[in-house]
Each structure stands twice: as structure tokens, then as C-alpha cells.
Amino acid sequence: MTLVITLLLCGVLLLALELVVPGAIIGIVGGLVLLAGVLVAFSEFGPEVGFATLAGALLVLGLVVYLELVWLPKSRLARHFSMSRTLEGQSQPPIADAAAVIGSLAVAETVLSPSGYVKVEGRRYEAFCRDGFIEAGAQVKVVALDNFRLIVSRVS
Image (cartoon, rainbow, N blue to C red):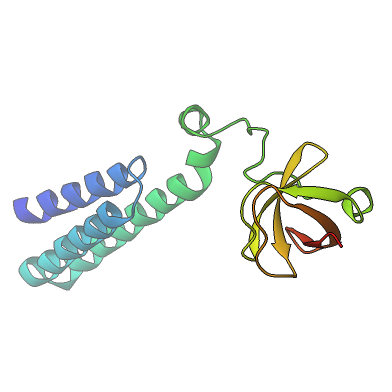
């Protein structure tokens, strides 16, 4: 009986630890230890004690799932460890306004072969050159706007 109680307590402890340690590995091991305790109860004490142990293990498993999925996200502990604010900012520069840049003259900041960077009215944009290779410092004209870059061509 000591082995069954030890296995069940270790399983419950591992499942409780899963509430605060992410990754699911500890929870899976805890569930397997609980299952081992139930199997030992069946083999050593027969079906009556085995089914009672199984019912208790399922009850504990249900309680842990409830705590993890329903109670914990609303708890003070979760509010303490969770993000409550969002950061303003962008990882990419804003896309150019098509009406403002199409037809404008730009200066190639890098070599366009055929992609690179251009500067239009003091702002840097990624660009694609229809004419192929253009040296840095050359003047180009913005002819279109792609999904995320300007389409430029040589100034005639």
C-alpha cells in the first residue's frame, strides 16, 4: 500500500508542478506516475481497491485540468506573471503612401541589383529596380508600389 500511496502522491505533486512550469513534460510524467499507481493498486489489491484508486486518480486529474485551464488564468498569480500591457511600435517601417511617392524622384542609397534601398524625401524605403543594376547615389524614379517595396526605374 505504501508504494501505491507514494506513486499517487508523486503523480499529484508532478501535476501540481505542471501548473507553474510550462512545457507539459512534467504533466505527462505525473500522469504516467498516477497510472503506475493505479496499475499497482489493481495488481496488488484487486479490482475493488484498483477501481477506487482509478476513481481518485481521475478526480485528481480532472481537478488539475480545471485548475490549469479555468482557475489559473484568472488568478492573481497569473496576472502577476502574465503580460498586461502591449508595447507600441513596429518591427518594419511603415509602407509608403502610394499617392505620395509614385512619380517622385529618389536617390539610390545602396546598389540596386535589382533590390536595394532608396531615399524618397528623406525617408528610406526598400526598392526593386526594373532596369537591373543601378549604382549607389544614382537618381531613380518611383514608378509603382509593390506589397512592401517601391518599384523604381532609371531616370531618362
